[in-house]
Structure formats: structure tokens, C-alpha cells
Amino acid sequence: MSNSFAPAAYPKAVLFDLLTALLDSWTLWNRAAGSEQAGRAWRAAS
Image 1: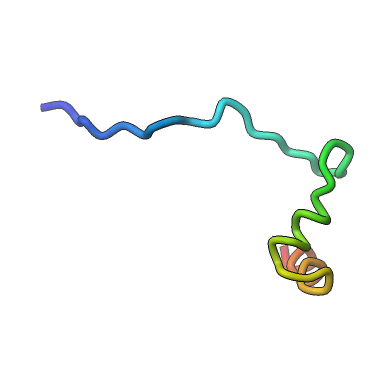
Image 2 (image 1 turned 45 degrees about the vertical axis):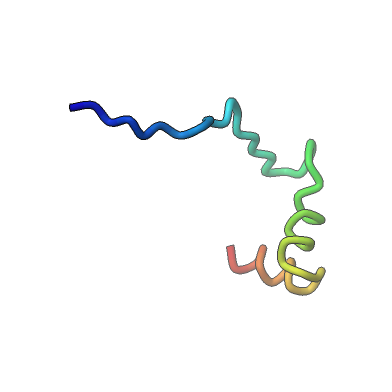
């Protein structure tokens, strides 16, 4: 018996930019959180 379920695609790479040298992650966090204040609180909590 084989498993016929297979994900459509896997990511080919994962980028980690801990020092925000390549990606403006602070702006991304702010947009995802809904505001600059919420983004700051979210980053502080993580």
C-alpha cells in the first residue's frame, strides 16, 4: 500500500537574515502586525 498524498511543492531555499542586512524585516513585521507599535511589541515578545 502506497501513500498517494504528496505536497504540491517544497521551498527550494529558506533565507534567514538576523541582522536585516538583506531584507528590511522590521517593515515586514510592522506590516504583518498592523502597525509600527504592534510590530515593535511583536518583535519584543519574540
